Amino acid sequence: MGYVRRDEWDRHYARDRGFRKVGPDEKALLAEHVPAPADGRALDVGCGTGELAACLAGLGYLVDAVDFADSALVRARAEWADAKDVRWLCLDIARDDPAELRDDGYDLITLRLVYPFLGDRHRVLHALARRLRPGGAIVVITPLAATTPAERRGIALDEDEIGLLAQGWRTMERFDTEGLAVLVLRDALRAFTAHRTA
Image 1 (cartoon, rainbow, N blue to C red):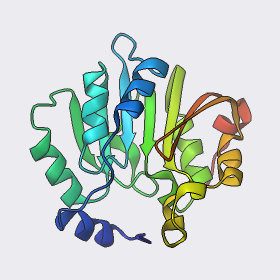
Image 2: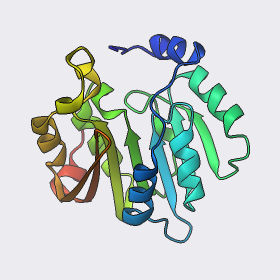
Image 3: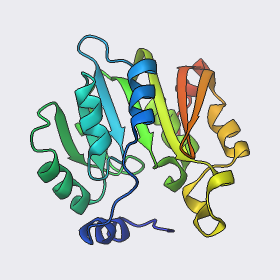
């Protein structure tokens, strides 16, 4: 799947397609390693049909769930109508004005099955790092190239790409589960967060 454009993703979700469900091991890792603080806020980037956003709300976070595919958000709002602590936003995190996002930042930012699709990964990660509250974490959940069929390589990261992702952070914890890497990034280096792009 080599989707890049917004209309391609809109068609994907409009055809009732999705992605792999959030597994019990993923949920357990999130609950253990990024528990919600009091009044904790989370940003779920590329939320798709909303399963992870609802999971984060269940952990106690107030969640901003963003996706740039309207059809994904239509499905998310319908499927998770009872998730009162989730705010659904149509937003291209890489290109749109982020004015709708919280000015006071987030304790947790998640990118589940999204990071390999970002066109300018480093710039987007820089921008997200600046939105973290003190003590906050970015969690990237991604398929691993080593366990992904060659024809689907574009949806996964290899070990070199994971190494590049970790640059700019004082700590990265890694947990592998069910062919996925769960990467918990904390304490962005000052030069990383201070970097501004045009």
